[in-house]
Image (tube, rainbow, N blue to C red; front, side):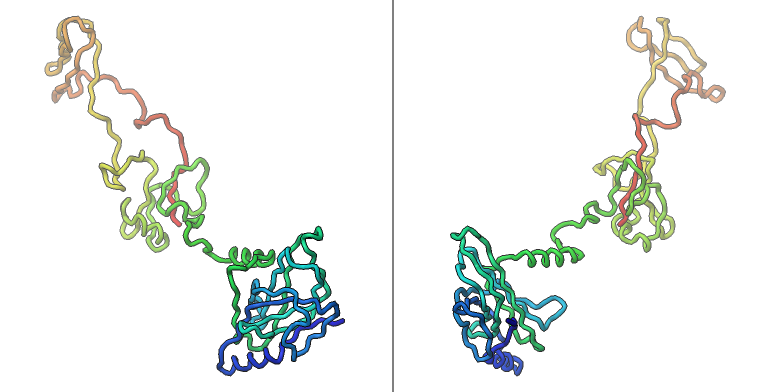
Length: 318
């Protein structure tokens, strides 16, 4: 027994009319039959299946990827349909006319009451040199996703450069211009915060975000430095650079005497508080000959800092 698919005379007539400027042919339904228990030989004059057992809106009607002249028609047989052997399949248009007729290898479709519950997917192909005249029409309310359909959709989805436009891309999750403290070495798409001067053309995306906020050298723009402690922009503008500075304060000098003691002709130790205190304010006026009379010895390092750890300070540039 050979198996083949034909387009019926009615189908050929409707395709020719559509190609001549008439209404497109809309394929909407599929049916399966059991051939009254006998093998079926499709004929072009057929207007119906030999013995139709089940008809429904097509699950999918689509052109094959890479072959636009090949139309695939797909029907899902639900688990509650069966108890007979599939031997023939037909595709019908919106008017109910049989357009495509095929015989089918004998396949028994069990009922769930027989202890074998399954859905069956029937696919047949319509190949025509002018498939553009065929309208691919389905009822989305009854569509069932087959495994192959899901695979095809996933592959198509993954091939897109930006399938989820409503979400940030991974590369965009951290905005360009963000400064990070990183516990390792410099990462891709980041630059060191070293107050370096960069080309606005080469680093156009970063320049569009920060411009000359951190200074400029000619047409070059600077990235932030890393030798500053960051603070919020509530008082000062973003990009403000401040040198190190101590808040105004006083120091105390030990004195066991209960009277004022002269340090130089213009500097004295003035009593702080009541008599008997062991510390007094230190006031330095200075003179031309002894400008630092009364100063205490210096101690400490070359910078003022809290407890510190060193990290890679970097800025996102693309």
